[in-house]
Length: 99
Length: 499
Image (cartoon, rainbow over all chains, first blue to last red; front, side, top):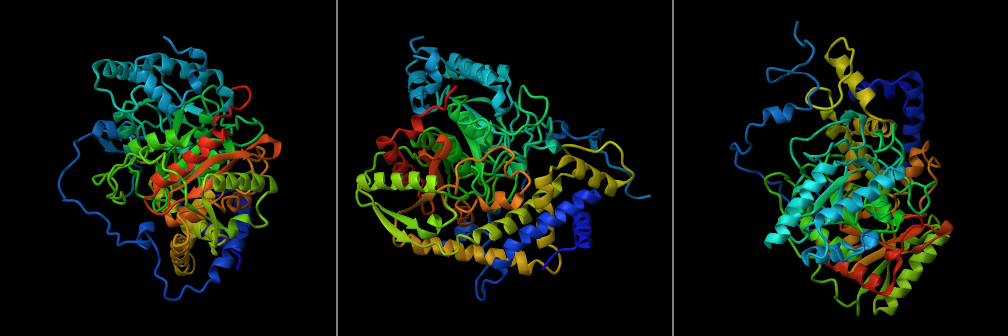
């Protein structure tokens, strides 16, 4: 199975990336090269095998931890916004979304 | 001052800690000595940020604590952090233009835990962008003393790569610019550069060290660990780094803090070392094989027994890893949208255009490739065939290890198929880089602790690492097995020429 340049354009849009035509071509060749080594994986018989999400689940039950839904962090707005590209009166600025 | 400051950089972490505690050395003179060396060897490209004032302030605080008798175990010991751990006092870039100049409002848990024991931070170390790479060639921010991004150089031969993604950490420790460094390992990023630079590094069991404040690459695989010259030093640092972090990391294990130095002197009599035949096939270079075989002979002399085992899905670990890790990366890196932190493009027409231009300018080629692969395998109609299939084989790979551990106590083999290659040699061939990860990926997928220990030298006098893999939570055993080899060999003490 091989990807086409239309696939690359579709995936790039989903990933919010813009690829120049020559970049897109190179990406297509490289990703198809990668999927050649993926073919072996697709042929493996995995019927009845549970997918493994947390590696320790191989040997013991792993439940993701939950905590009480209470306020635990102090208000650090200034520090948290110090590296933001655009801030005004404590708010993150973005281009107009709703006309 | 009794210690001649000319060879202070040759002292181990353990010896530095002893001399600092005995007040034979001050933390300030120790920090100054290493800061001078870092500046002298800027050409290596290992450091991306230093902040002398902060480092010396931390050193003065350590000296005060030592004088007051309230000092932690690592008081005054200088270390450096891979630039994937967020730090308040140094920039955090993850090697990416996306985060150029970024300053975190908080410290990563690993950074906090080492600081709590009195360690002094020398600066931040270069790495592959978002920890994606095996050669440290995917770095997009300039190192100190450089005006443009450059790959980190291997101190054993500066025309070669140091390995990756923790390449700056490995190069800095090998060149004696820091006695130890932090690293992270997702698919081999501690073990492979440790092997290539002739140092010792350990990746603990997944969940042992908190991931809080580690810029996320692939969350079900990412683990922090120490890189130093000896197993003893790694044991000291790992003891400080590990421990539950229930409020900040939902996958942090409940395993209590351990003193990993306690078992270092355990004898090897009767130890069964599993030798996976798949690690010694035709892909393994003859020079690496010779060094690994010699190390295994040494183990037999020390009383261990070699047991042939099989890890039949070793080769499959490459596609499985390179499906799962990019899938998780594409999700993790969706947070870089030019809104809350990091780069934002200058000119844009609307929100979507801003996202696209920002991400296109901010990410490098390898990161874009992995985001593309990840987006594709998670997209509608392909999820079952790729991502779910990879997760199922991940379980089979983990089960293979449990089978193997019924016959042996630890597993040993090469950390990488070859010694470090030349800068640029594989730079245009991503798949060639992926294939070279074959021996580190299986333990990563299984979440097992693994380490690399200097085992000798191969072609062109480049270092070769022996990989040791243990069962879950067996870091103490791994470190003692490594320590025993280091009592019988001196490869970990060799210094590259010119350093």
